[in-house]
Amino acid sequence: MSLNTPAQLTPPSFRLQRLVGEPAANVLTSEVYYKAEMILAEMIPPLVLEVHRLLEEISETLENGTGNIRDLIWDNAHEIRGLAGSVGKVYLGLAANLICQYLQDTQSDFIPDQEVMQTIIIIAFQALRDDADTDPMMKVLVQDGARAILAQRHREGRE
Amino acid sequence: MAGLASLHVLVVDDNPHMRSIVVAILRGVGIGTVKEASDGADAMEVMRAGVPDIVIVDLNMFPIDGLEFTQMIRTAADSPFPFVPIIMMTGHTERTKVMSARDSGINELVAKPISAKTLLDRIVAVIDRPRAFVKTSSYTGPCRRRGIGKEFLGPWRRKGDEKEKEAQRNLYQEPTS
Image (cartoon, rainbow over all chains, first blue to last red; front, side):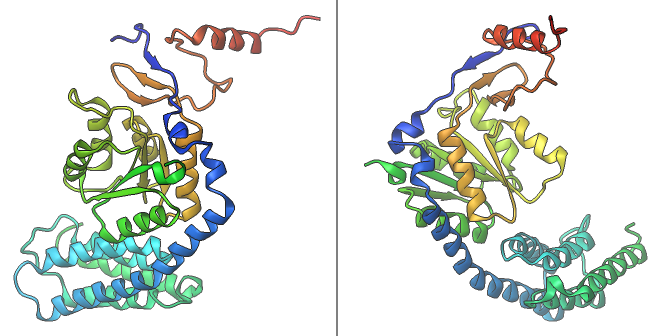
């Protein structure tokens, strides 16, 4: 099929609307939207607890872990980054992203620097506070964390 | 059975927490069948067992990401479900990523952090405002011309384009008094 060949066009299918029996907009009323928002709100506290657990696990692994500690930290940081958006914590996402940036381009046997990692973990815990996203100090902390990561990557010859 | 209870939705995301959020919302609003898959390969298996009415997929997955997964559904020779509506979730809202998602053949995009409203809005869109399906050598998926704006000046390659072409010509004609 070249540029001059007409595209094959299949008309829009209203199969799903027939299946539902009426327009979805009639079924998904404002009450349903409200109910959905409530369901989402109920799911957030357990997610915050999960983020706590993941951060504790990173911290514990750094102190006492053996084997491929880098992979566990990488996985947890990615998961925290994904969860941060859902729990509405911008700085938490940025802090988790700093861990990902630090571990970027490293192999499974990489041993992360304790000091830098613990600094970022402290920032991440701070970012979990209820008022974190409105606290101007959080921005400063995250910026400091970013500088620490850059400097450490430089020290390790990974610019 | 009619209403949302008659719908079958598949949620594909390698993050179990994100998946559980989406599944809880869908079940909570009364969607009849909500299945889960943790990656593209798993999703293909689930889909072979029963084609869903809507697929909600995350962009960032490993080893098959959401873009590849969408292309597999749309273009694989043995795909039994090339037309299934696909809603993609992504935390990456850069223009290039959004365009890649659009060009992979998705129907709708949900930016993370997801809100229940955005998710339900996209579901309403795929049910109530389905788009024509286009197949060319380089693209297979819903029509990407969401609205023909006056900025689109061709190429006109579709059979039904004559009317559009005429309307475009009229737009740029000198008004006759």
